[in-house]
Image 1: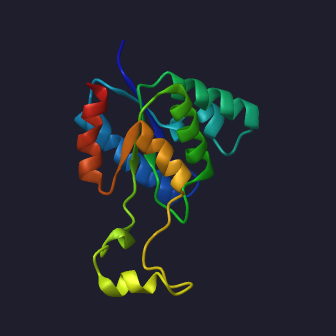
Image 2: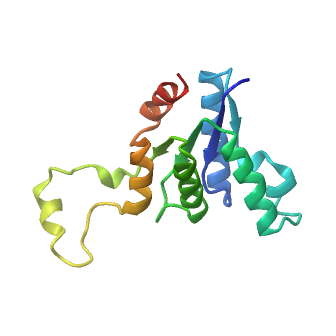
Length: 160
């Protein structure tokens, strides 16, 4: 039986849909023997012109998630997408590792004294925010990478 990766990401804007397709194409090229479940490709429940109830979506995607050996999760955005956070929680509970991708450029400059000093002034943080509970669930059974190349390469360690 071939292995499956579940791709957890927001999928509601053209930007999100294109980025998801771009990354999944790279995963499929690097790991041709692995199936990738990309929710936006599941027309039965994710065609936004048709109807799918919350129960239908939850059951369909959760079944696919639980059939996977690895969850890859896009963490970028104003905050981690609530659906992605839910998928991370399900994966944690099921013991399925999660490999997060968090590319926010505001992570840079962690040793910059001006950026560090700005933390003491309300509304002046120069750094991005990530929900620590969700990040912790990932790190308890996986990891978070801050660039695509490292993330794509790290996938293989979870498929071995």
